[in-house]
Image 1 (cartoon, each protein chain N blue to C red):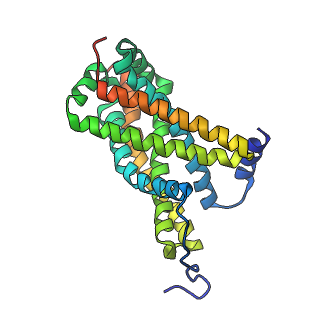
Image 2 (image 1 turned 135 degrees about the horizontal axis):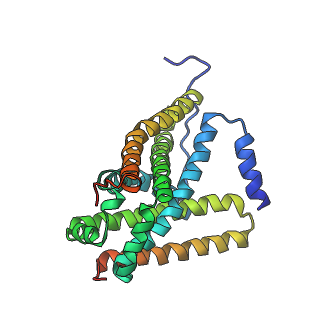
Image 3 (image 1 turned 90 degrees about the vertical axis):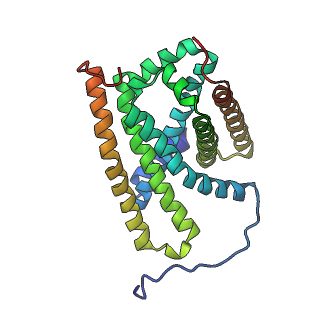
Amino acid sequence: MATLINTLWEGVRYRGGIGNWAYLFHRLAGIATLLFLAIHIVDTATVFFFPSLYQHAIEIYRSTPFMLGEIALVAGVLFHGANGLKIIVFDFWPQLWSHENEKKAAALVFVVTIILWIPAAIIMGNSLIQCNFLNACAGG
Amino acid sequence: MMSAISSSPTVRKVAVPVTFETRMWQFMRWSGVLLIPLVWIHVALKDVIVGVHAIDLDYVQRTWALLAWRVYDMALLAFTFAHGMNGLRHVANDFVHSEGGKRAVSWLILIGWVVITAIGAIAIVGGVRAP
């Protein structure tokens, strides 16, 4: 526990710049996605094991807090993928790596994440408002 | 052209012993490349295009009526969860320092991975049952 708090605090305090932020977000997004994934595999498996429970699981997915969480999760998944691609490129083509390229690539990752996330967040946010607040759900 | 100061780093070739960790390092990168289309298409389809309000037992049944979607979901299950659980092991090793602790964490992660992957795989093969 002490190491965990120390790591989290030092991770924020450490002035490593954009590359360090990319590293921190990569881990946070990865762990958050894995936690969601473990739950998601088990709840989807109810279609075979306990089909009567599946509708209940879906109701939870449709709730406002869960849909807000999903919108955040999409940002995490997009960032983790884009940043992962950055890691792969520098690992497989190390001659491309330099201090400047690392910073540029990390900035590009954040920009790409935001560009891809905005339309997804708008559509998901719209469906959240239509379905949960305006009673005008396209999905039924 | 790069200036003299910002020259590219020294690149040297070393013979890397092929251990379990070498294989996992390679797996994280190759599965990562594969997961970008696999996961992003899944999220775009289920969360953005179809939306959670249109998903129910009937929707899953219609999707899985096509064998290709079952193969897709099986690949998704296999690669995402293995990638994620190995990533968790990687992160955990930064916090757990004792050899015994590392071993215990690795076993827990391995068991969790096998059990949850099996649950998902059985459901994909078994398909949707009547409630």
